[in-house]
Each structure stands twice: as C-alpha cells, then as structure tokens.
Image (cartoon, rainbow, N blue to C red):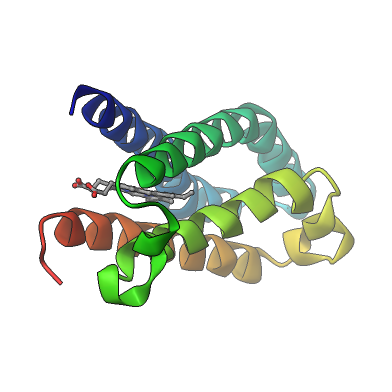
Length: 149
Ligand code: HEM
C-alpha cells in the first residue's frame, strides 16, 4: 500500500531526526557542558535549546501525524490492545512524554522553575532515561512490525 509506505518512511525519518538529536544532546553535548562553569553551562544549554527545540517539536509532530495516520489505516485503536503488540503502546508513551516536555514543560520553563536545569547530573539523567525509552520504542517497533513478539 503506497500511502502506508510513504507514511512509514516519513515516520522513520522523523524518528531519526528527533531521536538522533536527543542522542547527540545526551551523550555528547550535555556531558561537555557539565564541565563548564555554571553560568556558561546555562548559556550553552539555552543556545542549544533555542536551536534544537523547534526542530524537535517539528519532528515530534511529524512522527505523531504519520503514526496516527498509519494506525488509522491498519486497524485503528484496536491495535493498542496489548494482545496485538505492546510496541505501539510504547511508541505512544514515548511520544506523549516528549510532547509534554517540548510543548508544555519547556514553554512554561518548568525545568528552570523546578531547579532541575541547575542540577547537571539530574538533568543529564532525565535526558538519558528519555533516550533509553525512545531507543526501546525503535527496537520494539522494528522487531514487532516483523512479528518478532
Ligand atoms: C503517536 C505516536 C506513534 C504512533 C501512533 C505510532 C504508530 C506506528 C505505526 C502504526 C507503525 C507501523 C507499524 C506497522 O508496520 O504495522 C509505526 C512504525 C514505526 N514507529 Fe511509530 N508510532 C508513534 C511514535 C513512534 C515513536 C515515538 C517512535 C520511536 C521513538 C516510533 C518508531 C517507529 C519505528 C522505528 C517504526 C518502523 C517499524 C518498522 O520497522 O516497520 N514511533 N509506528
């Protein structure tokens, strides 16, 4: 089905754009920034946010639109039942978590208000947890889509 294939390719490109960026931030940039004096660290994080947050929002929206569209074409909400494969539920969970971070927590500056941004280890740990969940959704999706579970 051509429509489904195009949606799937777009979905996966969106995932690469978004989760690849999260991996770069988590495994490379934040550890580098954590070695800087606090004011400079904060400035770098803000610069990074300014550049990457818009891209991440666009990619998350692309992944959501294509994901729900494919779901509609391939069985609808019934596919969310665990019996049909928990991996789509995991994708949905990851998407909801990142959407909450990008569209609610960040615009409201919650990480700064809660002091989380000032705790280098906790801030890095939060990103690491989200990255692991996103990677699990990718591995689960690729394996599950081929009947692996
Ligand atoms: C609103 C959220 C999402 C929905 C509704 C959704 C739904 C879907 C659907 C229906 C498919 C096609 C499965 C099939 O071939 O039958 C799919 C594929 C895929 N999704 Fe998602 N998805 C969502 C978010 C995500 C997220 C957050 C990730 C990863 C971080 C992800 C990674 C993938 C991957 C890698 C595939 C390709 C599987 C393959 O190898 O064919 N999705 N998704």
